[in-house]
Length: 84
Image (tube, rainbow, N blue to C red):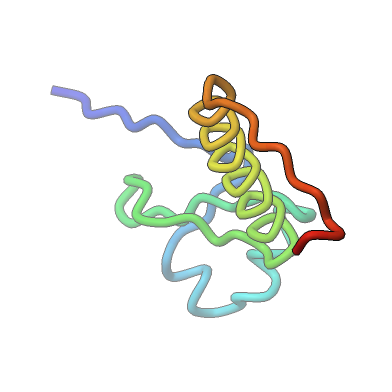
């Protein structure tokens, strides 16, 4: 039986290669995540800091959008800033 694995990166490298030259492996991704494989199975992704920051920003936007959607149907509250 052949086992296949869905890899969510265009570049992959083995764990042993990562141990030898970690920055070279990350550099191969040219800013994108690199799938790290152990016996041809993805075990984790090496994600450069900038890409991780972008992912976090997108997740925050998704969370904020969910809050907006939840609150859209709530009644408006009129506020006078001078009264605060």
